[in-house]
Image 1 (tube, rainbow, N blue to C red):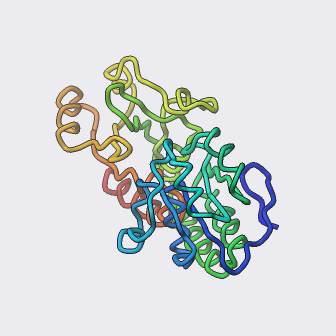
Image 2 (image 1 turned 90 degrees about the horizontal axis):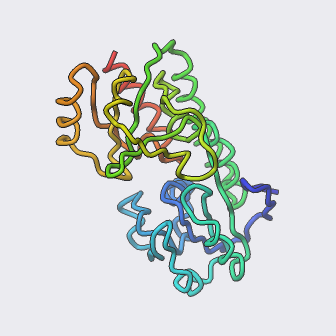
Image 3 (image 1 turned 60 degrees about the vertical axis):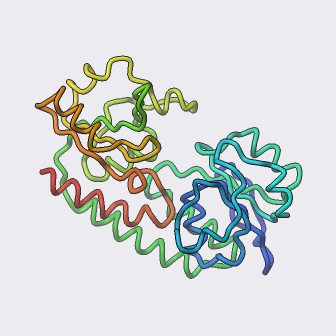
Length: 266
């Protein structure tokens, strides 16, 4: 019986599940598992696959879910994530949704059980194994290279400046290509897993490279130019935030993207 991140066991769904996904990367995963016909709701941030997800009604954002809209869709399953959705939202959903499936991947390899969880739950085991094989190939390709280690400041927000702790999915993804974040493990709250930087310039002076993510804050070339001018001895560049922070099928492309980026920087 498929077991989610909280240890809750979920029976295999029937032939006509009605799925609401409140996690952008998992919405993309459901489509990759050929579950298009069964996805009946999503968040406004669930934008991939762009050509297919538009038909699915949005029920708010990841943090401001419109519960009445979810209720009207009569879902059999709602998929949530520990980092992206509020615990109180999940609790409220349990009052009227038969199955609230909790996910919490913390590293690229955690996508393997994630694929199998959803594949087993929704009768897509074969497709899940195909995705798992592709991801394992990318993980092996990363592990086959002895990457020179670099300390990297990965910025996710401005005003205030925010970065990531070493126990986040992003940090563990970057580490696959030898990019190590300088912050130690944070606690369960967003404030510690995504620390605010009191002195950005002092932090930059202690790293080898700065990466500005294109999400959740949309860093642009102007931000790169500003920081590069302030710190001419430290390389500064943009990085595709979807490729470093999204799990699901994008994790496969993300590892290949990061290998190319790292080789280009060496």
